[in-house]
Image (cartoon, rainbow, N blue to C red; front, side, top):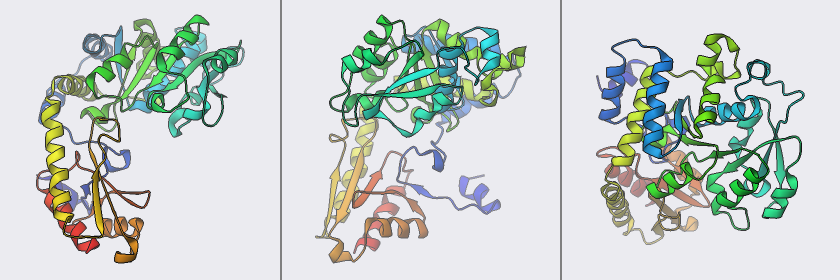
Length: 375
């Protein structure tokens, strides 16, 4: 049964995804290899601890870390990582979270790099403490912020590109000199592969990646790093709860199929022909740009280099609103309401189109609808 057929039986409207790996759109489409691995894992029961042991060894070997843990999303990886920093392997502390009375519970974060998902460390009882100013943070400010209540440092890896902030290597050196562990949110820092491996092996105690970006399920993530810290995160997860420690991570359950699928997705990502992958995206962008070139009031720009040559290419489409009489938000809304329905992002007075989440034949449909709406 095709996706359109199964959706139709439930009264669900499928869409064309020109927005990227967004959680609200289901995150990703599983490759056949990942589907096959999950189907194989579905054929037999086994102990989850054994599944985690095997996956940890495989992930650690691929990324060059002491171990790895598949979690129910990158957010869950951050929660369990923070819990590991707060409680470690102490059964009493594990049972007590999110009550952190009597133990260090502050996580430092550079104010200039604050982001929506940093609240994850507050779930197991952490308290965020901002360091620096709205647009800068110095190494000395970070050193001076460390105190007796400091439990760890939360580092937003994408924020390393922000000017006038402390780099990841410097932040790790400062924290470790003071005996403070570092938790890194590297959700989408997966390409170039050298970047992914550099972050994973940076010396940070725990590093988190989003599984959906690797071609695994929307509901998966990876926590890797120091082997002892990864083990502590497991104790603070759902298997720890089931063995009697009442861990705060009981709600972050994954099944054996997800663990196996995510491990295979990571292997596939690391072994993929990324030049070919990006070439396909470049061709899609060129096709859309050429199709819009006849509309003299419309401009289309490939944002890949501007984005820092990251994992995916985006096309920015912008136009003279006086010529069309329509804003980017209005065009995006019309695309979403049309047939086929197309989901894209309206940002900064234009449309930012992700082409890596388009399926076979959808580039042509997207182009046709853009031509209709922008004529």
